[in-house]
Image 1: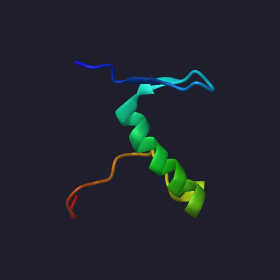
Image 2 (image 1 turned 120 degrees about the horizontal axis):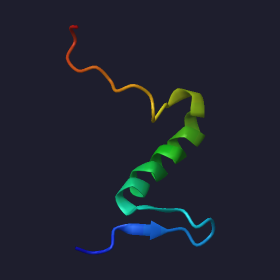
Image 3 (image 1 turned 180 degrees about the horizontal axis):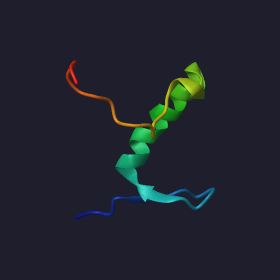
Image 4 (image 1 turned 30 degrees about the vertical axis):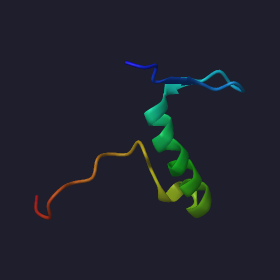
Amino acid sequence: MGCRQMKCSECGLEEDRDVTAVKNPLRRYQMDVGASSVHPEGPPMKRGGKE
């Protein structure tokens, strides 16, 4: 397997490259529509339509 970790040359953050690839567009979206609209660490969405 190849190395899947990335390290930021500016701040030193080390994280899996796939996780970073998902976070980047999410952060851009939050800046465009406002951070209060998106809660990436909120509770999971419910599936189906009935409880």
